[in-house]
Length: 413
Image 1 (cartoon, rainbow, N blue to C red):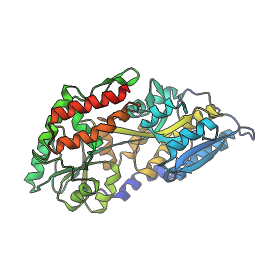
Image 2: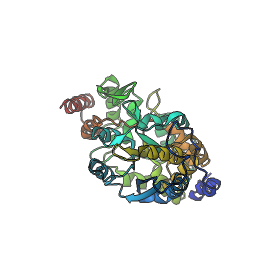
Image 3: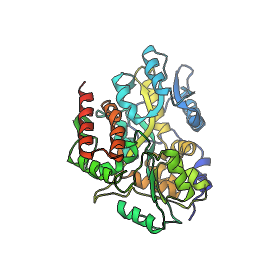
């Protein structure tokens, strides 16, 4: 069945017109004053949010002000500058009480001392596990999550009616349908490790190990035996092998191949679904086909809201986040604004009435949070270039070993 974008809104019609009944909806163990009567002296909260989602938060802001007397000021910010502005302004006392942001900012924000932990209490159990895992840094929750995003395989179901059992089966199915390049994924001259990471995990080669605090920056795993096996496989699928992976294929070329029907499988994110649906393609969402007997786990990116360490109204800010933004109505409003799977389990279930959303949610169950630790910066510095070199014919094992050594040296500086 062809999935149309209007079907998504129809599936959420009830949620979209529901009256906000927000106060006390979450079971968070917080002492914030959601039960206080409105008061002229209750203070205010300033919330930075991107322009795309300001309208989605207006109802929650108004409801909170009406209930508590705390004015919530929504300030539209540019996504490209919001993090740096937050880091610079919080120490001066001019920053907001709350800012929207990505979970992998947590290490940098914590290191700079500009964020404070949140108190979710029992409400933490109401969120998707990957969302809470991503929101947790060094054992504390710093982010009130509202969305979870991951890549998956878009399949043209008119060309290939059934999902592939594994990576080799995917290529075989596409070739049986008469396609010279059945599968596309963006790479580019400097590679794209984000999109290749599911295949790497299938070989048992995560970037970092974990402990009870989350990712462990002292346990670099990228250079283990599984990493070398992945590198060898990657080389076999590159320029001197099958040619499945190609650094000449960037995001635009991959998209066009799928839209033109010259590729039946496209590894990408929900941000590209609209283009495929608009092109009249009968889109199905599949898990990432593994090249091994193990699961291919993509990265999950989680979006949410941070609490400023310098907020003068932390109790109210925590209350607004947990008991207002952390409700099904508001998370669905945010979902409609950005079309990204809600982090709250109940909202995710409602949104998954749409099969496209449900497909990404299923893949998300196999996803792992992108590391938020500062040491991850040393990985990105070398990772994509090494993979691009391997795809283009460089010795896989030697190149991968150098990658691991370079990353470790950068971490040790």
